[in-house]
Image (tube, rainbow, N blue to C red; front, side, top):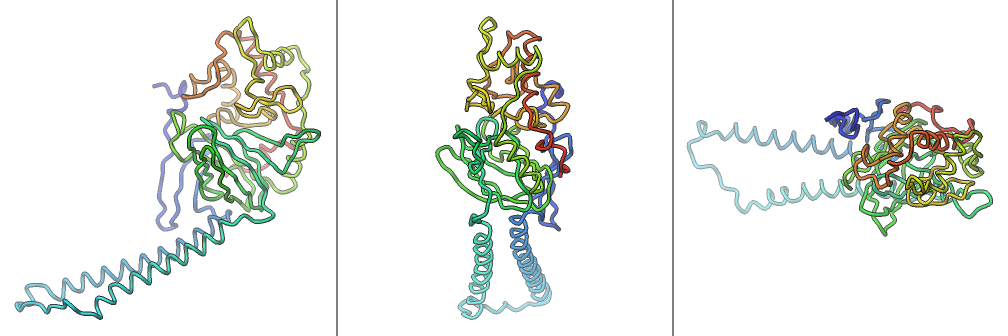
Amino acid sequence: MNTQTYPFVRRLPLLGANLGAASVFLGSAASAGQILSIGDMSSSYNRNIWWMSIAVIVMAIVIFIGVSYALFYTVNKFREDKHTAEPDQFHGNNRLEQLLIGVPVIIVTIITILAARTMAIVNPTPTDALHVNVTGAQFWWAFEYPGSPLQGTTGTVTNGNELVIPAGRQIAITVTAKDVIHAFWAPNLGGQRDAIPGSKKTFQIDTDRPGVYQGNCSLLCGASHANMRFKVVALPKAQYDTFIAAAQSYKAPAPTTASERNGYNIFMQGKASAGAAPCSSCHRVQGTPAAGAVGPDMSFFGSRNTLGAGIWEGKEREAHIQPWIKHCAAVKPGCEMPPYLSLSAQDLGDLEAYILSLKLPDAAAYWGKVPVR
């Protein structure tokens, strides 16, 4: 199979276990060579889990050494070639039985206390946490900032497949799903939670280090489960404040060229002669009549760096925009966006020109401001 035509069959990242560090590292499929790690100490969640794990691992090593020593000592001391008499029987030895029961109970009690203490630290939502609503759908992610209302409307800031957060602050993620069960996981930033239709669960992620981090759906959810990715862009506080303020006041710029105007008309009204439905029936663009909620919010599409829920990034993204519009299911299995096979090359180019014009101000653009982790 041609992996250039079907990028979703490219070799998946290798999973390696670093036993000494008790952490798991995954090489990302992204061209930027990102590393996913549950041992990333920039996250307070990972730090707390780390120290709990260290205590448990140390106990396991001590138990392993003790049991191994007792086994080899006993086997060597009571070898048959050294003893011809029948060995002593210890059935009914109360002291030994109490020891064999008491030691495991103490070990389990210590582990339970450590786990309960860690849960009490990482589970409560801090009062100053930034709240973000996350909705999983086949096969993309919607991020909504309920504490950031759009100026002059009753709506709130939303973004698709790219979560922008401030570094150094707890982020309260409330997850749910539209269709089937998904699972939200950005390993460098914290634990994972199932996204279940009709259910909302809140947990925390955070990082002290600005950067771009990879996230994935970690629960098999359909044909493009492996392609249901997202990015988390952690910005310094000042840059995040600039982004969220610009997002709240954002209004899509008016088309400035003939190409953008034709793309705008197709986006808003479709093209009956080509059997093309309006994009606005499924997508929202702030400051325009487009208010669809079926697909990802397109308000800042031109400021994003990914396409297809993280399948393509950078220049690859731009190269795949028109094939995506024309027939997304041909490049991403299970994609539910209707095909636009009858649109001419000119119309496809005009649609691309319009959606790429939907950009935040340069000061609020979040890509390129922080390193890829």
